[in-house]
Image 1 (cartoon, rainbow, N blue to C red):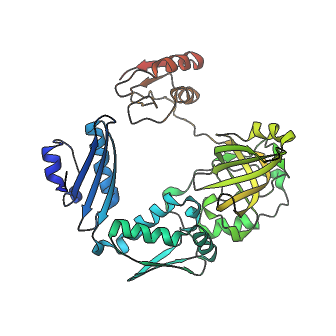
Image 2 (spheres, rainbow, N blue to C red):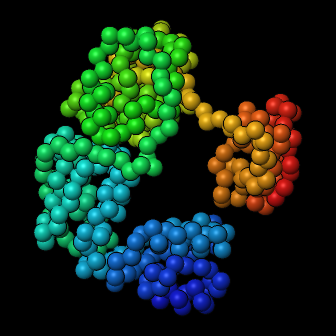
Image 3 (cartoon, rainbow, N blue to C red):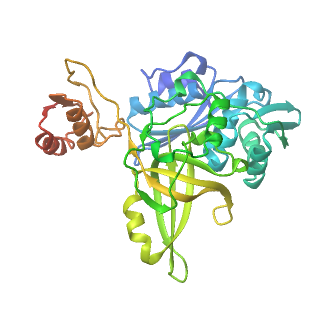
Length: 388
């Protein structure tokens, strides 16, 4: 099928699908696989359209057709300008994860055919190592049919001030065990950036898992810069992988950690005979307090955080302080068709912890979560309302 005006495609092929008004000028070429229930939509645009609007359009198509929908968009060369820079940086973050923490203060200027990225000296080194300039040139060529020359320029360091909604609720941490510790790294970085000064984790009863005792307050991960040297961070583990060296004498433990302001890959080595107790504490979902530094890893070709000390931490969970507890009557689990992520047993456990007497399960078109909900309801003393 050739490219069609969007209104013709939706009027003739997908009647009833809602689409944002700003997308009406698009041309679309659909590719449909009925056996796999998949649809790919190629879009063309002569004027700039926010990619979020196109994403919303595709979400509506997926909902109406019960298909997996992905898309790509090609803009006219004249559309490339300052309005596209935010999208450009967003896609760069998604494609080259290691540059994520170095783009908050990056500024872009376009002097055809030169695309200039003004970033920090550390950011320039990271972007150079990741070959970000070549990636940007390929991206602009593909989506704007435009040949550019990308230049990375080191500029004066600037503090990043996050929007108000990015500020995290916090609990005052009991850091009495760190009396006399040097916290200048924390106070300087956090205060200058206007970032949250404590995170969603508690350090009460922390236990040492690896290296030396961690002293000092943690900094938000998004503020980490390799040039800053040693830092303390705290967060939740995900993406744990464990391998052995060729001679089998040491474990290579890699994982990511997030404090919900940002994420960073971590890597450490431990003797095989002493790795088991360490891996009891380092697991997906565990909360850890780390002290170390960032360095370039030749194996992964990116920056990693190398811990010198690892201690346990605990998540600070929100509380329901209402005198009269609510009953949730609209809830989707990860069994729900295309719109749920949470495990039903965890949902029921959380509702019970909040003192809720009952909770409804209303997945779309399926009942597969009911057995798990029933078991969790019996285990936690909460009534399950079965729905759909």
